[in-house]
Image 1 (cartoon, helix red, strand yellow):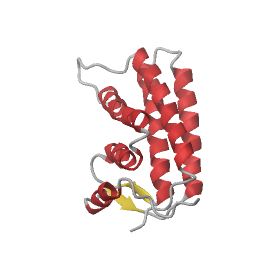
Image 2: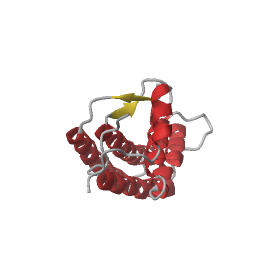
Image 3: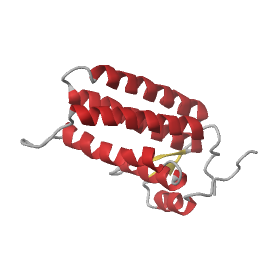
Length: 161
């Protein structure tokens, strides 16, 4: 059975488009697959970096893997984050709207990952940065998000009116 219109989260996606937080683009499943492969490589890099003392770079690689996997889901549908503030946050919001339930634990993890990534990338003088435990958790979360993306990209249709 082929899905021609994705109904779950439609009101949220329409609102995000109206607000300019999401934009319509040409749907591109091939590009989505490229992003998914980049996500897989980034999470592998994160795992290698996790064996070093560079927790910030390891965490950032895991975060980038999750971000690319979420972006792949939207690109496949003909959507992308708008050019305004909060482009990474809208990835989580848009994908959660369409996939919650049943994929909330995996996708929800991107929220805490984003907070730690921001505090690590833009640290305060005495602020905390990513720990080794957070790197491990982020790698697991990114792998779960990649699995969700790999599962839904083949079945989610282009986002239409």
